[in-house]
Image (spheres, rainbow over the protein chains, first blue to last red):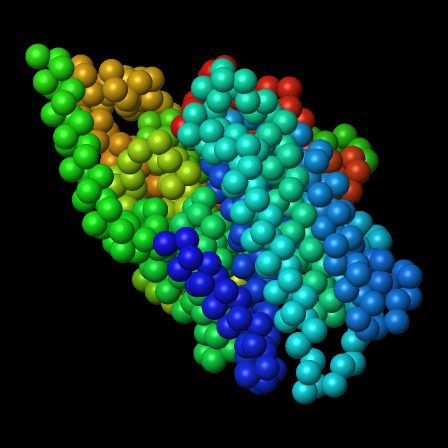
Amino acid sequence: MIRSKQLWWTLALAAFAIFPLVVTNPSDTTIAFFALLYMACATSWNMFSGYSGYIALGSGVFYGSGAYTMALISVHAHMAPGAAMFWLVPLGGVVATLIAIPVGWAALRVRRHTFVVITIAVFFVFQNMAINFGFTGGTAGLALPFITWDSSYYNIPFYYVALAVVIFATVLSVSVRRSRFGLQLLAIRDDEDRALGLGVKVGAVKRTGFAMSAFTIGMCGALYAMFVGQIYPQFVFDPMFDISIALMAFLGGLGTLTGPLLGALLLEAGQQYLTVTYSNGSLYLILFGALFLVVIMFMPQGVVVYFRDRVTKRADRERAVLAENEAALDLEKAH
Amino acid sequence: MNATALIDAAKDGILTGSVYALMATGLTLIFGVMDIINVAQGILVILGAYLSYALSVHLGIDLFLGLLITIPSLFVVGVVIERAFIGRLKGPEKTAMSILVTYAVSLLIEGALNIIFTVNDVQLHASYVNKSFLIGGIHFSFIYVAGFVMAVILLSALYFMLYRTRFGVSVRASLADQTSAALVGIDVRRVSTICFGIGVAVTAAGGMVYGATNAFNASTSYDLISRLLTIIVLGGMGSLGGAMIAGVSMVFIGDMVGVLWSPVWSTMAYFVVLIIVLLLRPQGLFGKPIARVA
């Protein structure tokens, strides 16, 4: 079982690694680049919100901060356009994390329902600041040093850096999941009061998880700014981004590892494809909404969990038989 | 900066704020009874505004008269949404799921509205929309005053229903404790459906006034829902009176900052106030002190 799992991961990674070498059409690699960005963001979002059950709907704060970090530094340092700019990508993550620390401190003082709303409020505060402060360039946004790579390989560096970010996010998510810290996050999701009673420092755990998840999202924002070359406050601080990554993670399977990856890959690629092909955003909204309702109603655990359960139906049945036997035993004991 | 501007801000806060309060009351009622956060409330306000728009433009029906059609229509929409999707949610993750479900519903409606009405901004018009009158040296815009009066009437009706009828007793019992309410024979399922319907129906009235005072399209709903959610959180989730006070203070604070400092920061001021209040009082102004745990 484990061996076949590893095989699948290796195959998937190999497919992603050779993709831009096989498909060279720039519009296709652009779609692939955005899909990778969202895969990283959804995975990172899931690492906190999926594991802890605290649904954050203001992750655009970190995406936007990362994008502005990249833009402001590369503009003010008069950076020569080129590969050197990629070194600023982790810096976007650092700034996002630094912002996430006070935000998390404030937002995580309350329980789940209110947390959702506070993250939304914080998001609008940041969007408002980006629009109204002078150094952000206001609604006109900021133009980055324009990279003039040869068009035949224009997307390739971006693609591989994005892939590296996805791998980073996935590895981080796996190691969190397997660590004591990850178990503490899951305990908070299942029963926060009991976790507290059992000695989990719930406040510190939540704040750490929140700040960690901001890092990758900040990197993605920085990479996005570099890719598009011109950022506007309403696009890097986009309420649609907040909800999209949550929906992607949910669609695939909240709290699972492959769920957010798969959800983001399908939805983002689908959206980009529909936008490019039909240039009809409204149709996408309807399809997206309908698809989502179907998933919630029929596979509330997400697509990945649903199909995994079907595949392991036999194991389930065995478990059911076991449970029945146990119940019968308990009954006997009771008599 | 002068006294007149401050009086204007206060007047505006009370008049416009009451309309926000009406829309937010629907949201907090739904949360209080069902533990459901209805993210679709924003787009439903816009749907209500578009319904009024369609009635007035295509059939020539007056905006206020049209409410007799739009309020029941949105009640039905609410009941359908509740029966089709919300009512099926169960388990400890119900509240979190409800955010996602209602968001999906709102995407569907947004897409449909974009296709039917295009993405161009529209505004509701009637002969009286731009009329105003003077009382004690202060200008009162007719539509704001009418909106205020309507909000007060509807909120009073809601209060009457909640505190003076048998159905209201069932609702308040369900607000207090669903399990016990079911045990004493209240059909909590039915109460939930009707409450969701009522919570959505008030958006028709709110949407009409909103549409007459603002240009809107389907994407305006993002701004609306973020305001409505923050209103109910500031007021304390599930608290009807809290929603009203928070609704008025939101507009009031925004206008005050706009007058005293600069209009560009007026939206932000409210959010900052909200964050500060929640740091001091996580349950909101009038929320129950013990947080609900999912």
